[in-house]
Length: 269
Length: 269
DNA sequence: GCAAAAGTGTTCATCATACACCCATGT
DNA sequence: ACATGGGTGTATGATGAACACTTTTGC
Image (cartoon, rainbow over all chains, first blue to last red; front, side):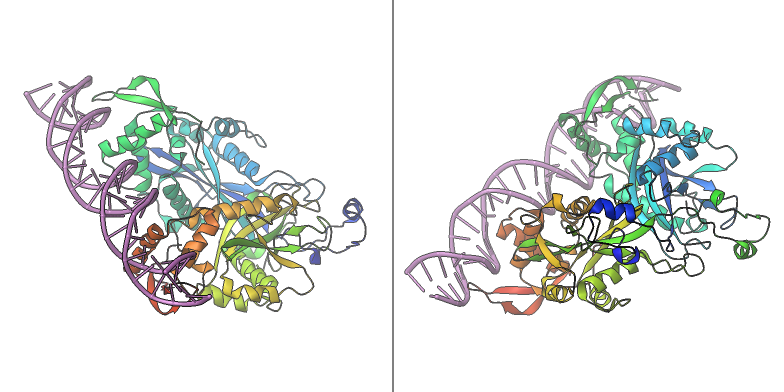
């Protein structure tokens, strides 16, 4: 892999590597466009939601699409640009948190604090998935907690941006390009990972009650859990040092619940 | 995602989609090279092995590298080339089974018969991972059964191709580019999936004994299992219809073992 | 007091683990 | 006969599902 030598000419391979590289000329073969795509999830009112943007131009004009953008590759030779993950973070910050172009301040801070989860999902590259030209999309998914969701709404200027309920509201078939397939892969991944990882905490406020945690699990798995059994299952996390008791209580119209805080230590990716 | 409109000019967006597309002109922005990479595993003599190719030219001349090649994108506009998976299959067939260029006969047949397992792994795109130019590699892993391993050896013509023991023999640091990272991701994925999927059967002959299956699991997980408990654990597959009894016995220097056959039905991806 | 959710207790089936033991074969 | 791995039996402990029950709040 990497650039196979056969197509990259000018191989005087008896020289040393430094000489080889300074003699190296980049030949212009057809290359695909590479973009990063984002499936951004949140859970509000016990409901899993995904962020979509309405397309303003052709193709798929008027359809809802996943946010995304070009992978920044510089001139692709001397200056090779930014990493895929960095591109995804920038996209997330620009399009969703309204950071100015080129900045990823908000998303970077939230990522560092483990308030949001970002992970590469799958790479989609079927020919003609974009009618304009060959596009390879490195899809990611992100989990953002509901308390920063208002930030997201603020970011939508000219473009129409909306949260869609994955379970109901959403007309999967109506999505632009192959984005329903990407979304499906995202849902599948989150459903699979929530059982053995700690990603659920990225869908909660800094402190949370056990039933709020349960609510997130139920929204994602689409099933209901026995409150007692669920409590026991996650109380183990306290003895394991994954979560810790936090001051205050969650006051509702019924018995107030203890709240907990997620401790970064022992993080399961 | 897909081609964001901003960089693709000539948007007369009041026309219909067909007109838009026929007016569409592909602008030449810097694009990365996209390759597919392969981590090809097999298990021989209760040992997990990976296939590597010695690099003949700079960069990383003389180092061992994972096999791979360009993603075929045609002219990237009117003719958009072949899918990522197809590229991976072709690479696998050409470089490893010695199929003639452009053919993927052998690999396609084996894939169809579920004799080999091929799956996308992760996409690597760190800047400067290839010093020549920006390269995005869509890495895959493949599991090939030991009885077709001789085929692989036959395919190595000019290039030096070898199976390396993942546990011992292999000097991870000495690998070309970031291929040790890719290999590591491959090992991690296989270790994770073998417990709940059926991928192990792609590392066995068409019929196998329970202890041969155990041997594959042990090689991949790097631990030993109690023969009795392991047997019970996998005999359940027989009642579940995932495997079935096959005629004949595996004759060794000790008590002959029953052999089984993997039934495609109920395949867990 | 009543509803409703927090939180605890108990039972039962399932399953992984450890380990003892018998069976069939080549030498 | 005996070493070796195939194959079975069994006791124990951990875990998860089902569900009854108590506690604490708002109304």
